[in-house]
Image (cartoon, rainbow, N blue to C red; front, side, top):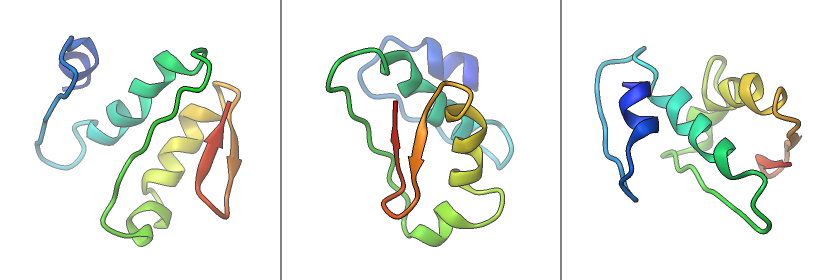
Length: 82
């Protein structure tokens, strides 16, 4: 899934599958390609912040990728800055 998603040339890619195939990782990894672009912004939506803040959720996964890429988390607003 990750390889197909990240190699897509489409402006919008829609994918779904069972838990554990890497959808969240791919969703988080994709914007890293543009962090060097001035004024680039990206948004990831979840139904509620519980889905973001739960252990093993989106925030934990983003820490694994974004801290390595030099990102700094603004925890109160859940914003990453590079």
